[in-house]
Length: 323
Image 1 (cartoon, rainbow, N blue to C red):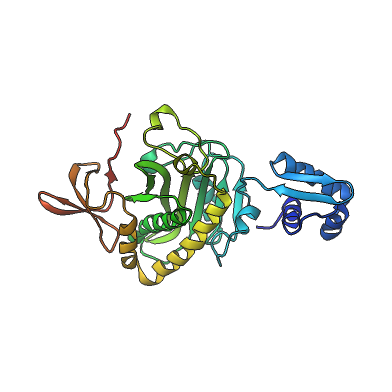
Image 2 (image 1 turned 90 degrees about the horizontal axis):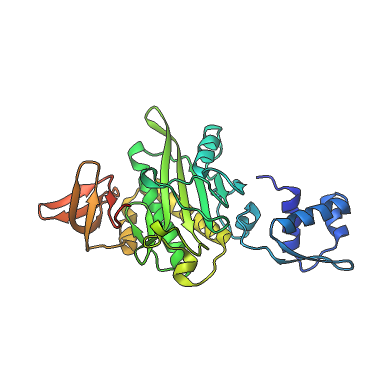
């Protein structure tokens, strides 16, 4: 997306130690007064900027921001995330992504926000948010693929995010089909939705929520939710996580378009939670208990019961008692 004057000033501050107001004014072809107003705006937005009459301005700390500029610093993709809509607050990034997709937004468009007021999870559940602590993002894809294969992108996104977090020394596992866990507590969720025309995919929208800097959760979630900070004691840059995910996912997405899902089965199973352990699986019709034996080449789950192997395209692994 086109950079604002504020973004251009911030980019200039990132490129050097100190820069004078006059240098910034010359670079952007605006007045020094306009520069000063934008600097004030950046400080109000949380950027730590030092000012000095003789030497100008110095960016001390850009903070934990989710702005396009903060994400682009770490981005190595060709297409994904090359158009970013950043919102300080919105009801849900999924809704904005659906609107943008309907208006013809290109593949790879990313909607990201600092605080969702009505984030959604699987089965219509509410996703808990804390202002400025998590990642809420929705990615627009336009794959040339059969409708029934779109759900595989949930699994691939889970693998990509798991690989990224493990490189950051976070011990996450994947709970089929769309959750990431740390020590039996949910840290991230993935929600995949489609827009279709007749029998073809118009767009696939992958929504991802990650608990990053959360320090606590409501009592009802305290035994089943965690954050990267709570689990590890470390702080993480949210923009870097977003970019690293896009970098990893782009390669996997292109591979899926060419080779299909079969080659991802072993990767998914390497990261799977409770593989070969007893689990309970619930569908709208039945509840089944057995041993989780992995997934098939199309992403369906395999559970070994006393009656033999059963496969599931859509179901929920029951880990916690609903309250």
